[in-house]
Length: 272
Image 1: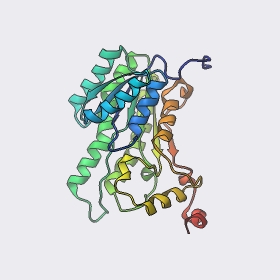
Image 2: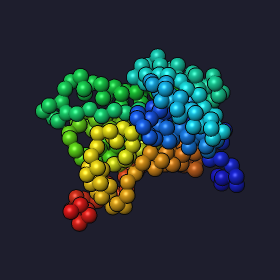
Image 3: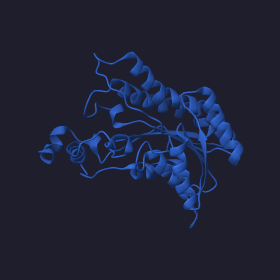
Image 4: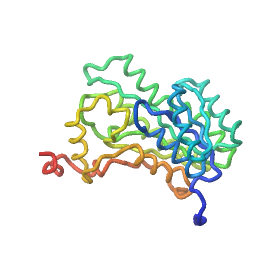
């Protein structure tokens, strides 16, 4: 299949983005992805627990001439996830793309992790993606197929920087395994499931709790030596949501300036 000249990359598609509002000043991955999805022709259901943040995303989309609407939901609730899927199809007539973007961090080493923190992080980061997929996938199948994009992290592959976060690491590793199995079991229904693994992004989620020294160290740790932001994630999501990636399913795509390709010793000259 070849793209038609002048055709928007997501023209005719209906997408759900969870966590579509930024968690603080600036642009987070959900907001950036929602804006680009709409810019590329998709109709977007902006799902967030905080409707004010989603309304800000909606305003930017509408200012650019795109089509979107806000839906309040807690994606750890099965009832809310079912209602979200229904809302997308009722408002726009079909459903083709799901960007599973909601996630939180939670502290804890193997010996200090608290059970309530563990349960909360696993619910928000992992259980939510199971629930959204459970109710969205049937709508996609009815629409002829689609693309699900789950957000993991490089921390799901190897230990991250900074303080220990065993709940976060476990949830992000679980997303990788779940993605592979979803891809297999939904493949014959023409539903593709892929996973992105962002690296050391600078987004509203981390900006309020990071020193400039740590920010610079994270930048220098990657082979490219540049800082990632929400738009780097959003453009990858456009590709995975589009028919350009029609033969890609079950993959984990690191978006990390090449960080996972390097050992600490390889980057040592750039970290001194």
